[in-house]
Length: 369
Image (cartoon, rainbow, N blue to C red; front, side):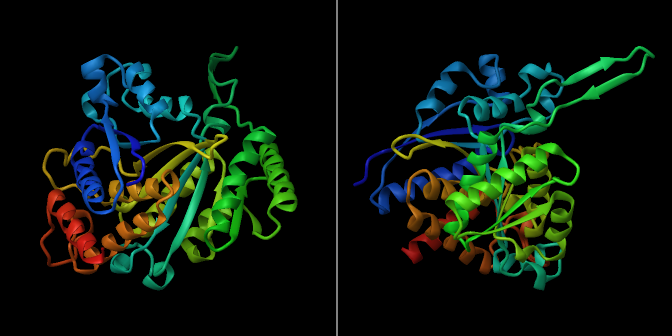
């Protein structure tokens, strides 16, 4: 029996508790059948935390997050809390978790399961077999740079401004994650910026190029402007293995890549911090989809993105690649049998509820194990 894995579960708002319940089903199955024990604690986050504790994430929950081996989050937000002041909106919880845990590397895989090829808006031959990873720098760039604000000019007009800035160390640490990811995949890294018009892009390219030469000459490195990358993602997406880019471009490109797969309900993500002396990284895992308040409480949400986020946790936080792959194969098998929630159902078929999707996955895991 391996040592307990300290896991903090934050279901959040909307469909978060529903999809998280199916992850807990998978955790229970692993506890019983795979000789691994998870020590699971729970906390409130987002609107649920504001209603109960007066803040989108409490100090007690932050302390749990700091001590956990990994954090799994469902979703935050909803119209109920739209009128709250900016400082206490549910989404501020996510920003604080990223900031306080120093999660600078956001991993957004875009994988097309064979059974979902026809769900993509692109031609099947463009997306069949697609498996790419977008690595987004998460704590720097224009979203965090200063000065920023809105000012009134002498002529009475207003001017809004934000600052795009990166240091050598900020670029190098995320690029290093990109090179390491590429080594474990198909050994190709594409670095994306706008070095043709932005000084921050010039520095980004210089730092990535120097790191490649000094530490990763075995990895195939290419460079691409962000606008061209957006075009290439819808023109020939399978040319990419790992893409590393800044906060702003990563935000845009990862959403573009997400739709290549056909449904946000299938997409996981991971946000990682720096490795400590023991190789441990603080980490937050969450599905890409939001809280979907329009379907919350109806039991129809797709839990697979959250389950696949848990699989990423097994791979990147707990060094359990075999178990992660087992879950991914189970997902592929149930999709191949036409078992789908409403967002990915086949024409002429009835969708299954959230809970039935979770039960079906357990049946596939039993068969594979």
